Amino acid sequence: MKALIKGINKLPSNERQRTKELLEKLNILKIAPDDELTGTQVRGFRLGEKKYNAGSHIEVFRKILEIVILKHPKKISKLLSIGGRKNKYFSHDLNELRMPEHLRGTDIYFETNENAKSLCVRCEKVLKLFDMNYTSFEIEYYK
Image (tube, rainbow, N blue to C red; front, side):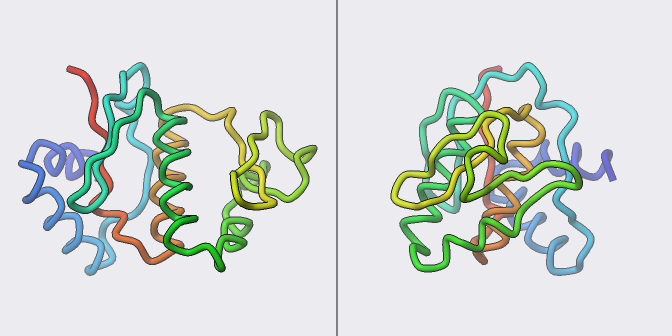
């Protein structure tokens, strides 16, 4: 699977998105961490046809959450269903998180003490939860 993902990532952007969409429809593509994200410097990200500026992985995550809030303000409590085996990622109670940050415009807090791989996976899970095209999500890095 890692070889498949590496091959997909080498494709031009439009081909990469079409390939990811096809593999997702065939239930082959799963949301999984990318081992090559550690130590990368973020320039921004793409979602659909739109490009966003961001300087870090946590900033990408914040902006994804902002986009979701704007598009689905009444369903934002669905975020509370995303969690790990041991840790919560979203909560109404800031004491349940190690490094909480308030999600503006809501009564929800989210965990910020995460590495690049975890944050990228979390972005995709949030987008998928809200039926947004997570296969079009792509972080851009400095080379």
